[in-house]
Image 1 (cartoon, one colour):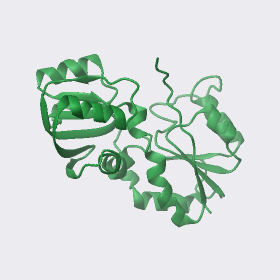
Image 2 (cartoon, helix red, strand yellow; image 1 turned 60 degrees about the vertical axis):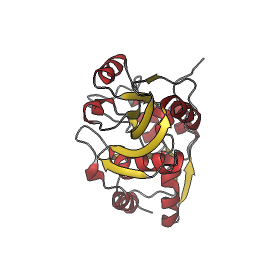
Image 3 (cartoon, one colour; image 1 turned 135 degrees about the horizontal axis):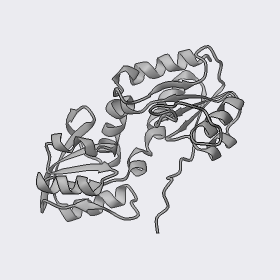
Length: 240
């Protein structure tokens, strides 16, 4: 099957035009007229994954391997070292990043992983209602996302409305209209800002909150009649 047909299918499922201006979703490596026999799904691209893949495979990832201003391809440096290996094996790559966050990932995590009904949506942010003590809710979140440790900012004893953005969503803090915000990559100054505006925070991890990408997309690809394999994506961090 031609990559163009797969791309068209994915574009209908989660339109690439929905991606943010700073994002780089779409076909990043390959030829629209190229033929593929196999699809591999993964949150990221890493060397171990590329080495394990067959030639002429289409790799669909959540995170773009080419992000920002790529000014050269020095093969001893990241990401050019991975791109070189992919080219030699004729591995194509389509990234579905912020467009997929908006159409599928955030909602899936709220409904299927956390088990709550969506109250409303605002771009990257999905809201849901709870009636629970903060400490109990934090314990539940830690268990659901299998967090090795839980980092949080407690500004409420009880929670009524919660907002969620998978991945890294702290740039949205000023616009959150909830008691508590669940997102990843919370930094020191994010915590300080949240205290000043009385917003509780729970860090759900970047990888931990987005690792569901492949299992969400996999059922849709069965429609195409191509073999789709979910790669064993690994968190780049190690915790002790």
